Image (cartoon, rainbow, N blue to C red; front, side):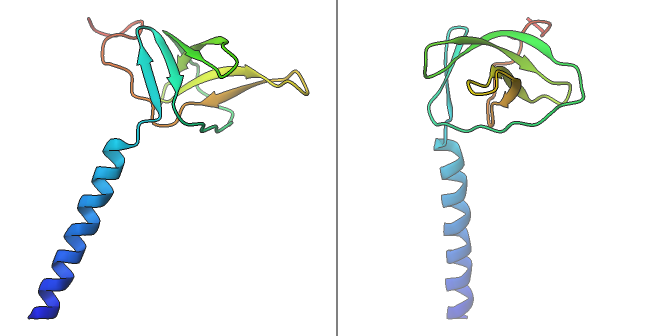
Length: 108
């Protein structure tokens, strides 16, 4: 019985700490219509679906403002240009959640 209670309390502690870590893990800061990364996360993949502009801009470390796009599946990305090769690629913004209805074409 004692072992069972310890196991239950340990499981509850792990679940509550994991949900608290998710809530405090903010990767982007939204100031007006500009999005700035608070941590660096990049993923580059080719998306087959057409993308729509959101009306928001992403501010890079260099100070560049890049338009933010939304894919048909709801993922956000910016189009970047490689310094070495000059090729364009998509940098997906993991964990970004924009306010509902603020993006172009959304409900107001």
